[in-house]
Length: 108
Image 1 (cartoon, one colour):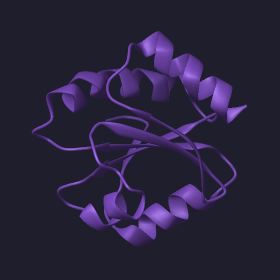
Image 2 (cartoon, helix red, strand yellow; image 1 turned 90 degrees about the horizontal axis):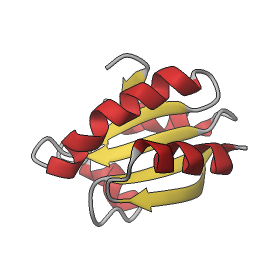
Image 3 (cartoon, one colour; image 1 turned 180 degrees about the horizontal axis):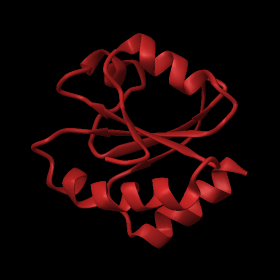
C-alpha cells in the first residue's frame, strides 16, 4: 500500500519509531475484519498527511514479539510513536475523520 511501511522485523521497527517524525503503527492481522476495514482509511491518511505522520503496519501473527512488547491485546490497535516513545494509542476501528483528528492532535 502506497505510503505505508510493512514492518518486516524488530530491528526495522525500532529504527522506524526512533525518529522525530511521528509514526502511527497499525497492529493488525489478515483474519481481522475491522483491520481490513480500516486499511484503506490508513492508505488515504498516509497520502493526505504526507511527511507530517508516517504510517506503518505490524502483522501480529508474523511479529508477535513486537505486539507483546507493547502490550497489544486486541486488534486493530494503533500506537503513535515519536522518538521511540509511545504518545498515545487507539484500539478498534474508527471513522476516517476521527482517526485524522486524533492523529493531528497527538502529532502536533
